[in-house]
Amino acid sequence: MSDVKKVVLAYSGGLDTSVILKWLQDTYQCEVVTFTADLGQGEELEPARAKALKFGIKPENIFIDDLREEFVRDFVFPMFRCNTVYEGEYLLGTSIARPLIAKRMIDIARQVGAQAIAHGATGKGNDQVRFELGAYALMPGVKVIAPWREWDLLSREKLLAYAEKHGIPVEMKHKQGGSPYSMDANLLHISYEGRHLEDPAAEAEEAMWRWTVSPEAAPDQAEYIDLQFENGDPVALNGERLKAHELLAKLNQLGGKHGIGRLDLVENRYVGMKSRGCYETPGGTILLKAHRGIESVCLDREVAHLKDDLMPRYASLIYNGYWWSPERKALQALIDHTQQNVNGWVRLKLYKGNVILAARDSKTDSLFDSTIATFEDDAGAYDQKDAGGFIKLNALRMRIAANLAARRGK
Image (cartoon, rainbow, N blue to C red; front, top):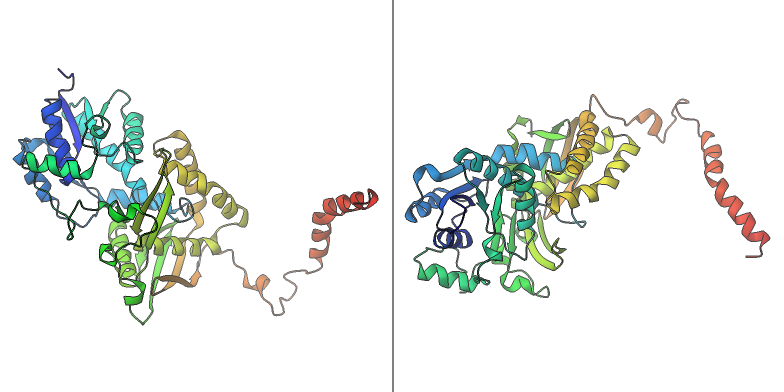
C-alpha cells in the first residue's frame, strides 16, 4: 500500500496526462488533484475539467488557473532582459514555462495537503528535470511520481491502446492516422516533436504549423510597429499600453501574419541525447530583436559585452531546470540592474519571415552622442590624435613579441 494519500497531477487533459490520471488511481489508489495551467496555449481548458470529473475527481480537487500574466511578466520578460537564446537559436519557450508550473503545483500541494506531485514528462526528456528540480527547490520533502519512469507504456501507440481500453477520449489524432505530434504551447511558443520529425532528414510538413504562415504566403507589404520599453521590458505597442500577456499575444499575431518565428532545431538535451523539435515563436522573435535594439543605445559597451558573456550560462540554467537556483537568482539580480536605464522606443519592420530594425531612440537614457559620432565637423568634441597613443599602447605587447621572434630568427 502506498504512503501517498493525495497527489497533485499536472493535467492538460491530453493523451498522456489522461492516461496518467487513470494509472495513478489504479496503481497508487490515492486521491488525485488535477492542476491545469492556462499559459495562453489558445485551447479551451474546460474540457479538462469535464474529463477529470468523468474519472471521479472531486470538483474541489480540480484547479484550472489563469497564469498568463504571471507567466509573461515574471518569467518570459525577465528571461528576455538577458536576450536569452539556447544553442544560438532556441528561445526556450518550453523551458521557461516549467518553473511556474512547478511553483503552482507546490502551492496547491501545500493548500490541499498532498504528499506528492506527478507529471507527464517522459524519461527521455528535459521536462522531468525541470519539474522536479523546481519542486524540490520549493518543497524539499515532496514525493515526485514520474509514471514514464515506472510503467511499461513506453510508446504513444501503447498509450492510445491503454486509452481505448479504459474509455479515455483522445483528440488530436493525426489526420493521416497514427499518434499525434507531441506538442507544447503557451504564450511564448508552440513546439512539435515526434512522428516523422524524428528523422532529421525529413522536412516538416507545412500543414503542421499552426501560428505562422509560411514566409512565401506572408503579405507582400511590410508592416511597421513601434515598441516602447521601460526598465528593459516592453510596455506599449504602437502607442497602446498593454498588460504583459496582452502585448505578447499581439506580437504573436503580428509575427504569425508575416511568417516570423519558425525554427527547426536539433538540440542537445540535458539527458544526453540529440532531439529534433520544430518551434513557432513569433512574438518572442520580434521581442528579442527589439530588446537588443533599445539596449544598443542605452547600455554601456562593457556592460553589454558582460551580458553577452553571461547569456549562454543563463540560458543553460533555464534550459536545464535551474530557474529556482541561487546562481540563476544572482544572475537575474545583475541582469535586472543593467536594465534600469533601458528605456525608449524601437521601430521594427516585419516582412516575409524577417524582423528588421528600422529605428530606435531614448529621450532619457541614450548614450548615443551624435556630436561625437558624426562624420562631419565635430567642433572639437573628439580629438582624433588620441587614437594614436591608444593604438600604440595596445600594440606594445605584440611589438615586443614580434621583435623577440625576429631576434630568434623566427
